[in-house]
Image 1: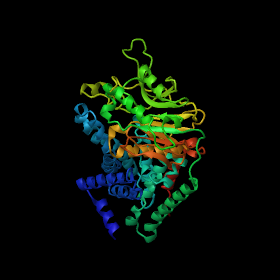
Image 2: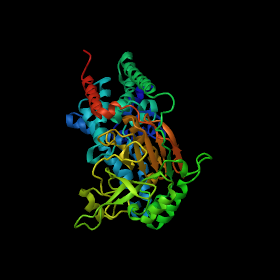
Image 3: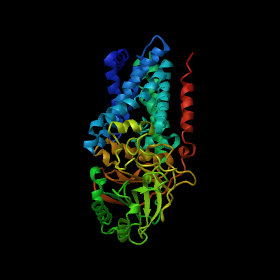
Image 4: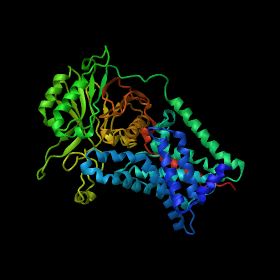
Length: 530
């Protein structure tokens, strides 16, 4: 049997051969992520992971943990290297300053993130039962390690394993029940199930687990078809959105000398006719611009606000990303600068703001415990703000005239499951402004958009997303893309605002359902036929 021979080769591999198998098996997982979304290929990394652990032997508990840790580190390093290679593009925006440090983002970050699956592999190997039960152990260990990765050191839940299934809209609906981490638990279990075909001793043992996994996939599809309503989602009456995607090169966007030219481009593009019945801003109610739209402080540039007011028709509101200066405290050398969303009315008055809460480490600020060391070697934040951005105080709703209450999210704030909706009364939609121009024509913007879309599924809220270079779009409460602008295109997009969907179990209970599933998996892994 070819599968048995393949499994034997993986299990018995040693040294560099085993490391390379783990590396390439982990890297294959990127094929199931955006932009390819080949979700059935989840079986490659997860099935090989089981065989790698079967071969992670040791004469002591510590020896078994170390063997599992080593296999898991190489497996994780391959996964993160293949899934996050595009981070290198950010180091080339200002290549004279940052190109030399590219290995830190492209190699060092995946090497660090690989510690999480390494610990999961090691812990799983300490209690590694036989038969199908080891599938449950691996799923529980990897899902728990992903939850930790999303929370430790401010968290980095990018390309969580559940995203391998989230590209298929019907499979993604399970996130409305148990969130991304619950979907991760199932993704690992389903992907690892074929491993027993090669290692079980009886025909029943070989095929029972894969057939259960196949039935699980069918149930997930059935749940997805049941949950997604037929036809388009209803829309909020009287709301006509215009999303503006300027597609500015990143090096031009943060050059202060380009401020006037950038504003000119924004105003001209925003008033562009898109059809005979949509001649320009006269036919919309809300205009939305992307994150950090200007290389100047909008609130301290009255000339820019006057020009915006001159273009906005009566009762049309602008929502834009912008840097915002706070009040300078006694003894401080400069006021705090926030990465903000600001709301400008038709008179050019800023009537509301939201300050980004979850800043990007090393991109928007330097972690305090590393700042002195990093500056000593000549590095700084990527953003052109001396000292970096300051963090907002709390996740706040954003009130905009003529719209339901918005849950504002700036850039990668949208990738954190369970931490996207403000407390209090339920918001009506997610408003996500971002600037993925750092990453060019790579996988990064596709992955970012996919994660934003999954938040809509989890919370049952539509998403309005505006990006400098794309992908901009409107997504309904079930994760269906209503309208979008592709990556690397200049343009405007006119779209309605879908209504919010029913409150989801995940929005009520958060990760509690995932925790319950985790306990069930661990309890089932202890049952053994007598």
